[in-house]
Image (cartoon, rainbow, N blue to C red):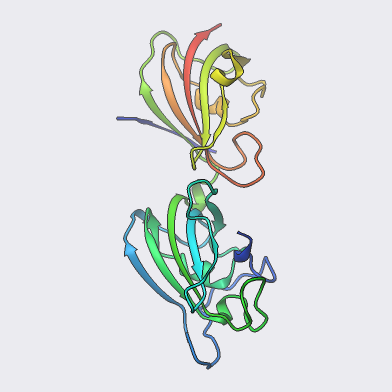
Length: 247
């Protein structure tokens, strides 16, 4: 695990036979309609391109050839959809079609039925249906950074730095990447008091992000899946923390 410090200035997508992994492009058998996977970027994102093994969080709308919507999480009230690209957890059209997109990028995917739900279909999706997606990658973690904690210093503090074994008092506000509140000292009605290193916090990665803080310092601490508070779905959690005291 690494801690980076910087200054701060769906069910329809699940693949049949989950766990299978294909590294080669697959072409649909000859039939009217799409014969291969087609991608077109309507907005090019920034940063590194998505590769197999990377984790992305996506907003999307899926349509059939007649334009009818069979699934969508485009509304802000719905959570973004998590995909580990190339891991076989989604249809092959997504595992292949997400490769190369960048953070903030928007892409249209035209998926032949062989890379979707094949001759059987699924739920609202009829047999041998080509699928058409409009999607946007709203967050990404590269495969080799999935255990990294990112710290951004919003306001400097003073005095000595907090270390393992210190008892500290903090104000905090935690949210998911989609803006949903996780927990807050305001909601609890009091600051949190704990000893660094004793794993007294539900968000088990938060202590690592607090080490080195000084009194009065404010940080934004981004925790990858598995290091934040327990949730029902993989998500990134962002905590804004102010250190009030050290003992």
